[in-house]
Length: 83
Image 1 (cartoon, rainbow, N blue to C red):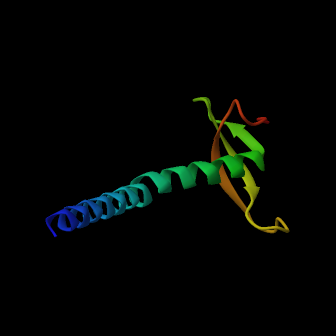
Image 2: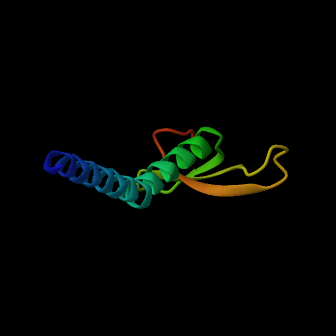
């Protein structure tokens, strides 16, 4: 019985540790990764880029499929063609 109780305790510790790692990932790490992926996607679709002089460029990209709406994104100027 004592052995089974020890295994149950280790299982509980493992579950709590996995849950803690999942919380840290979803609140701290994933938002940064997601914003970098989105910015990279927007910069790959960028046009009308203007060099800011500090290694970045302000560009516009199509915010929807028919490009009736445009939005701005700041990209690294070495990854886009500037006007």
